[in-house]
Amino acid sequence: MSKHLKKNGSSQQCVLFDRNRGPGSCTKRDTFLERLHKGPLWYTLWSMCLFCLQGAQIIVFPEDGIHGFNFTRETIYPYLEFVPCPQSVKWNPCREPHLFSDTEVLQRLSCMALRSKMFLVANIGAKQPCEYKDPLCPPDGRYQFNTDVVFNANGTLVARYRKQNLYFEYAFNTPPEVDYVLFDTPFAGKFGMFTCFDILFYEPAVSLVKEYNVKQVVYPTAWMNQLPLLSAVEFQQAFATAFNINVLAANIHHPSLGMTGSGIYTPSKSFIYHDMESHDGKLIVAEISVMTPEHESHLESNARPGKTEKDDKEAPLIFYREMMYDNFTLVPVRGTKGELQVCANTLCCYLSYQRPTISDELYALGVFDGLHTVHGTYYVQVCALVKCGGLSYSTCGQEVTDATALIDFQLGGNFSTSYIFPLLLMSGINPDFTDHLGWKNNYYFMSKNGPSSGLVTAALYGRRYERD
Image (cartoon, rainbow, N blue to C red; front, top):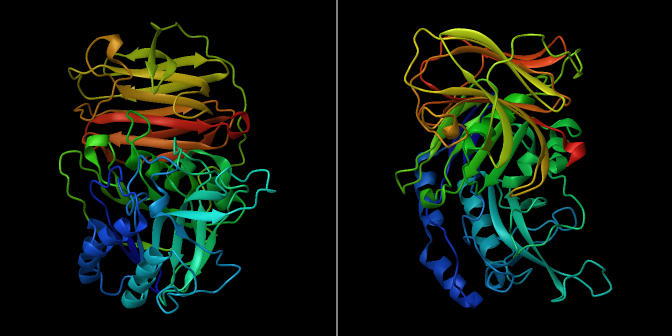
């Protein structure tokens, strides 16, 4: 992804998607370098990007875009580079290629940045020797990290981030300490950086925004979509909206594995690419405004999360279904208008809705308040209005991509956390923006009127990080 931020506060951005970078099979580094020299797809597309992005100032490549994925610790070794700490040594790999060994990829990336006169962000595998007296040192005497690197417009290595929250990445180690990585640019000031699964956790993603006051984020990812609540474009936009920041997200493009969806996100507009049919990637170019510290997040409010009494209303039909591997409590959404409430543990969700006609589609209001334990362990509080996969209750929670029902709604809940991400996904996996969002009378709410397409998902996705 590339982004150009001009002095007047606007920016032009381009997202670069990789295609079908699957499991690697190199057994020797020479073999890997030979493949690199022949020009893998990411390098070919880079040339295209240079052609169309005259004047752009930053480009971001996706996670796993260079070496692929599904490695063991041993099979990934030929792909690993040595990445020195930029705070310890100033190094331009393009101009000083012989300063460190096993840095051929870094050299090529550095030369790309230098030739194009733009900042460049890429994801690689890195190795770091360690001493056996280090209690965390692996038996083979080295750390292996999923690593993002940043080069400035002169080709100098200015930032290195080692992924904190690994997603079944057995080839890599978790860094001994959390990396809080910032880098300065002349066109947009300070950027923060994290990778893929990190976005669901407090460290380092939320810390960068809350404690380091980051307003621009670069985000390489290899995200597998999971509907109805965690598709890539859906959650990337929710993160930008919740924290009132810009997110430059480059996702790898591998539709057969459910991996697609990248974009340039601001709190009020997004430019996305999501295509599960085509194997072709895409460059996205857009102009956006630079976010400044004066822009407060939607999570800030004089109101504080707290408990509210359950309304003493006639109880609707309640049923239970698994959604996102969690046991949700749900109620059906019936008629052209109404008000509903459903509760689980300490969380009560409220829905007020109206629609012009009743379509041949079933919707449900669901709630979950508990520890998610599949494909990661983290505590969530969720209020969700979802379209079901069919007309029976058993289909609620299934993955749905298209809808026709035009629903005006206000959705809220008495959340016990202030970290709440607004998800609004319309037909065709198109994220949308709410009309209103914030705290009101100790509950957090979102509303939308006059949607232009059918509603797939509207949800408030709360994270209680302290209970992970």
